[in-house]
Length: 356
Length: 276
Image (cartoon, rainbow over all chains, first blue to last red; front, side, top):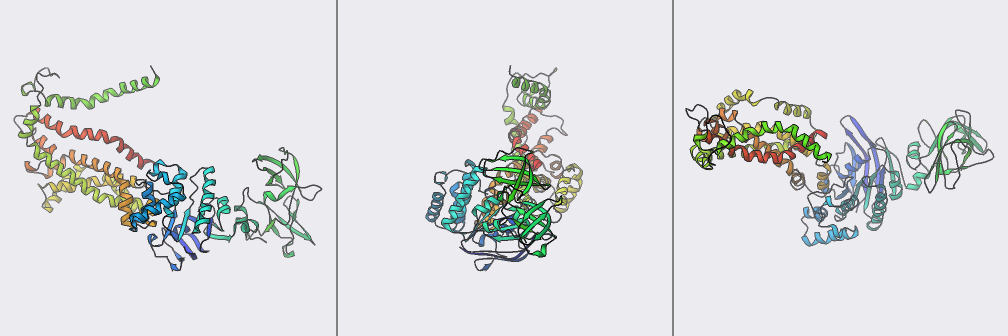
């Protein structure tokens, strides 16, 4: 097992630069998730670690070896692909044992290792079948098994769960996490699903447009997002953003919206007085207020999810979402008053996007 | 009567004139091939005959030197197919896997060569073979057939190769395979159906080709089947039609059967290129 260090890595396809100087340190035994919207460069970065894409600039180090010019087969990595990439003309046993066979390991060793991996993944009774005879979840496990038998230094996962149905995805998510807790293999996992990122990662790397926006533990990113992008990307339903003018008056502060509504805001440096800011409030941090401490809102749509009730409301001319665990009997058109915990809301600079 | 049955009966009724047109020459060929010689020209012509004579085939085999022509045809078709495949597989692989300058132009070029009739090029090809000293040599046919088939085989193989996920090869590289190993252990085994179908198509093209064979081959020892059969008709005082037809049956029917069996794969292969 080994660490992975990415130093100022760049990637261009012709004149188009898709990754602009990325730095990431993946510690030994760590499970790091690269997350971001489609086209943010996360898969390209993973493929660069694997050696499937060339590196246009910077360095990638696995263990203590710079691997920029090392072909994939000599990097000692294992990868799980989005579409599993099982060899369709080989049995499950041969699929899992292929890498050992290429390394000319003795037959007995191959058999023992494949059996071990199959045991861990509950695949023992499928070893003679071909990939076409397995379900999506089983194929996914075979792809994992192929990585397991290798004892590779690093596991790479390229959106491995996105082809599975919602229920199976949750099951496999837990399985992968449990497996990592047991084997402690250094892992880099790419996904566009922020829930997968939050639930699985030791650390999350949020990427956008070829740049790293923020790196940190899941809850750290959730509670203290560095900027508007991270704040809006993590969390579902996502954070509400309301723009307005910041007004500080001693120990209290307000954000005055375009239509004149005053919203309670946290106290920050008075340098921001009279300046435009963005107020960010997570839906679950909203509550029903009374006595004028919050702001008036009109209910638009009510969406009960079972565990919660999600209310989409019009607040100061903006559509906001609030989540309640109580069973409030809201009706569309109803006037309510929404308040929020000032310790949990954020202010952002609308120009740079950074948190104030 | 169920509506499905009704529908298919109507379709068959509409198609039947076409079937008659297609099957008529085969029927004439077959009844001519198996009737006695003195019943060839009766008036009015009739389908029936007094005696079913398989012996015509044996006679024809000896008299028309059929065995040698059959061997020549096999030689030319097999070798030209092997050559075309050997050169097309790497070309198709490169077209489906790599980005390179002029790729689009090369594909258009391949397509355009298909728009030209070989007959237009016969004279030029003949002079080329004269210059190479290969006139009256079966290998001249091997070369030209392979060249003519390559555009088609590259095109077909490429569209099939593009349906084999690149991830499979990448997975093999990560598993520790070299490019060559991933090609031979992963990629080519998966491409076998496409190679078989294009191979057989190329084989049939070589088997049926007439104009080039007539042009390049001078001596009757080296005639391929179409030319050999043709030589039984052209420039003769007396044409042994029952022998000609027996030869034609032997030359066409096996290939027609193979072709009709394979056509579903061919159509699938062509459709692959269409929707990708």
